[in-house]
Image (cartoon, rainbow, N blue to C red; front, side, top):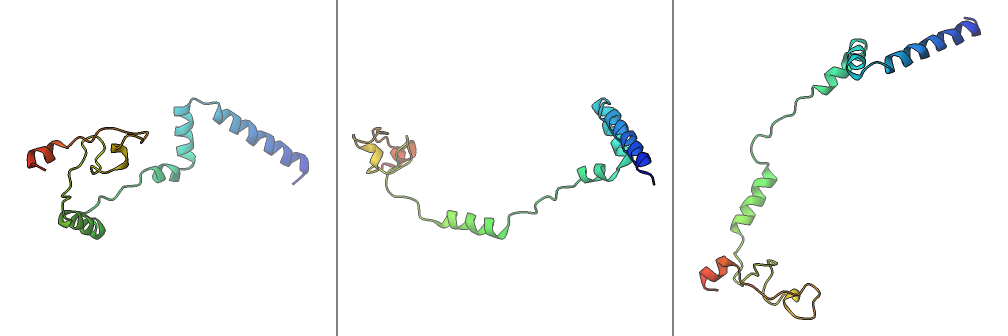
Length: 108
């Protein structure tokens, strides 16, 4: 094939590509789907649904359920125990200790 013929073909292909890229998005997508239908199939991946809890999640849930409940009162503001650093004056995040409503009702 002569060099001039190859150059002409490349120019025609480039002109065609420019014309396709100049189409409105809906028409361009339709045209590209006609040329390469596999691209559309790649978009249709079906997600698998999880079947219940994984063994790790189930064991973690059991461990949380069986863990001992804290006996010390917890602060309603920050969720920490009474002797936590933020409950004393020099702390930049100081706030007075406030018992959580559940601790108050339990009499702790």
